[in-house]
Image (cartoon, rainbow, N blue to C red; front, side, top):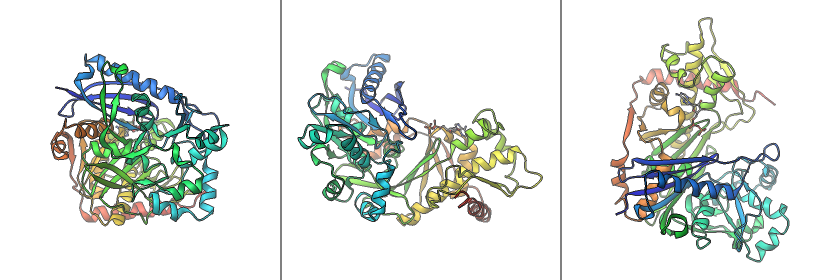
Length: 496
Ligand code: ADP
């Protein structure tokens, strides 16, 4: 009997492998960073070979660390940095150039042109996305246009495209399986999220040959098997999802109205909206959360540019704290912020304000404001921004948030979690297992092969470290939120 499910977590700066047992417990972890290439300002690349070799390396390492063999692994699930684009030669497996990473801005001008042609509503309606260089479509166009010979080869059917999960599955199956899961497909800007097929009108408009595209498949399904040369015997590959979607799954956000927020450098919020896509009036993107059991779940997604980064700013630029964790101690030593607000609009503001000319501001200062108040205002700003995005999501979806599930580095901060719960007036759950992204991939794979019975069984699995229940009065909440809105208004349209 297999004892573990293997999660391959192919991130932006490192690849990890985590082996989970039936209870969702972490039994082994291995991790390796890989090189980031910045060939020009704003450009970011990875070596696809290195993504593969480090991923395979950590998988073997995680198994060896606990003496696990292929027969001990029920299935492999993959979660990955989304949108990053790889094109390779179908016959040789050689990438035609380095992978273009999601963060890479080289195709901004292509996106501007598409927007100028008035295509934004057209893309939104089909793909759920805003036109942006993040998504794979314009990265593929760039490669086809700029790497000599690739377009001709692609026309002859000799080139394959994949996001990172597609690449890893192709490599693990030694070129036998070329698939992408729905959640990853929904980040390409080429995928029709209603029909669950590549959108031929878009492909024609962008001049992308359909022959390069992987077959879209549900996120929890038998895709194929990792070749025996890698682990001594074949292991089934049975799950895949983009990192943010996998985190929502890993936190058991299976039902409409459940949401997760990853508190990292920035924040990534996803709210499950159920089985039909919800199109946002507030500039959020619509995405496929996962496909499982013949059904597809959709989500609204929003991000916050500066969250934990504001804590780093306190530490590294202002030097008012020495460690990120110290922010909690200081914030808890004062009753409130003494009326001051910090809006960390260092790079403009995203949803629901969408003001790229907004800049950071500190307002409401009086003579009594000290560094503890300032630190507290920074932590509170993370919660306010989250509350703004959640309000937009609930408004778009016509759903009431039942609970917020928190993960990421800054979710360790108890003060922040309590204030978050107070300000959204809903419980905040912090899981005991911080590996929620990897766990989500493991769940998807384990469900497909019967390692776990049902999503209901998984709900009981998810051990909660702590639940933060709201305890603020409605009047206090209203007062604080209205102060925040006033502060945001002061930050808008600052730079020209
Ligand atoms: P990322 O994956 O974006 O690099 P992490 O999930 O590792 O981010 O979280 C790191 C971020 O969380 C940093 O910006 C850091 O300032 C912040 N952070 C870490 N610990 C704390 C803490 N105890 N309180 C507040 N912020 C924290």
